[in-house]
Image (cartoon, rainbow, N blue to C red; front, side, top):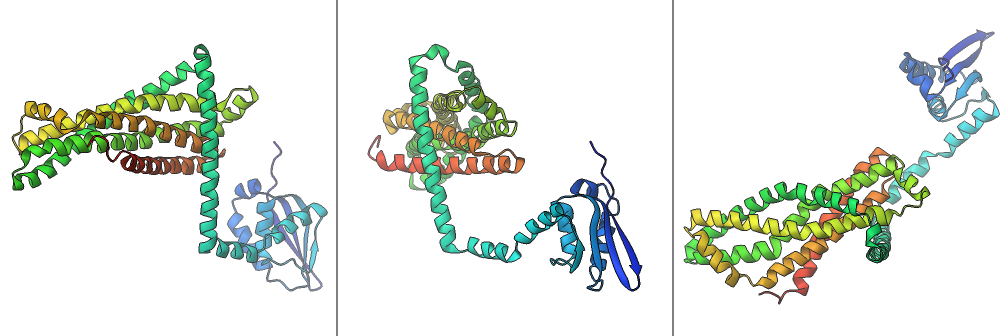
Amino acid sequence: MDRQATPAVEISRQDGACSIALQGDWTALALAGCHEARGLRARLHALAQAPEHATWSLAGVNRLDHIGAQLIWQAWNGKMPAHVDLNDGQRRVFDRIVSLRPEGWKKRMVDRFNPVTILGASLLSLFAQLAIGVTMLGQLTFDLLRFARAPQRGPWREISANIFNVGYKALGITALVGFLIGVVLSYLSANQLRIYGASTFIVNILGMAVIRELGPLLAAILVAGRSGSAITAQIGVMRVTEELDAMSVMGISHGFRLIMPRVIALAVSMPLLVAWTDLLALLGGMTAARLQLDISYAFFLRQLPDAVPVANLWLGLGKGVVFGVLIALTACHFGLRIKPNTQSLGQGTTASVVTAITVVIIADAIFAILFKDVGL
């Protein structure tokens, strides 16, 4: 690597004329290695106050990049001196800096905060995301047909690994949250039911709320925050390390090897996690009911099948499958959109979690409307 020459400023005065010559390399690397960079900037600003007949010369500048040119341009207060010696390459660098007019920046900033502009940009972004989502769903359908046609050539290792990471490793957190939610719900309901002498209805409240709504929703939110973010980060890191580009070069389908295994894994794991969350939430509810209302475990278990029709269980498990597919598609979608830089990786992971949770809640609302008469 070539050694960077230290940037310097030389001043000569003769017969009342002032000549300012810049020497060395005026690049980001040279300025970073210069111990007197701050003093150099202050000196340039002081020299910019010289009389208009002062002559500036950049003939001694070996290298000039946009960082160094910006430093010099700021010293000139955004205006080219009347007498300056530049070569063609240096003049082109300053011309590019001149083309970035602050007036244009201000205008764009004003337009950016225009409510109509914000609304239009948001709608266009929404439609673009929906189009990409539909395309991904269509590609997933073709990949599933290809997998069903030749299952022996399918990505079984990826599927099993994702089931382990998404399902088995999430048992602990879902059990803890489910148990505590059951305790809280039972405790709050018991205080109200005791007032009206309807303590036995705790079975109906807990069973219906947990099996039909809270179990699937809690499991989905936890998986979206835990596993959805991990999927987005994994694919995003593959983008940063150019593994996705290498897969494309080798003719390996992103959908078949990355998206489909995660969708299948979540579609298989989520119903099991929902059932596990329901079980622990009911256990927590039974424990609180035993302590608060003196309702035995045996009575709770005998009354539960009559209080909650089995259709609610199947509805909750079906929600788990749908929620799992939606979380996987959302996480993969944002993972593939990440650009090869760390800032985009963080933003994409955050957007993935927020969007996945929002999509899950919207889907749950749609389920509530479509199946309002089922299992009641």
